[in-house]
Length: 116
Image (cartoon, rainbow, N blue to C red; front, side, top):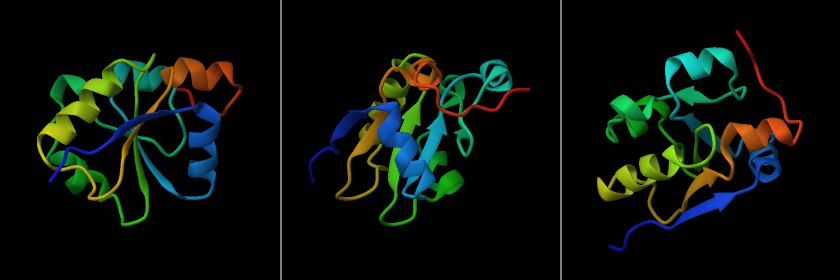
């Protein structure tokens, strides 16, 4: 079995997936960052305590849904994707996606965020 493909996608593409209910979005930032601004519908799973086994247990990733990680600028989500892939817990026959540029790119694109 080969390692899953890890791909970077644009904020606009991921937003479209979220609107259509096609993606599960996991935010790997820390709780204080989450409290400042977050993408609606994202699930918080901080990288500082990241356990790949929690991904299927926490979010389930139903068949046919895309698994997307995001962070502040697009770096930490890469580490989370690699950890999940290395643990053999990634969705079968599907890539793992990363939000290119993180929440900073999402905000710069004018996409919705929640605060507080």
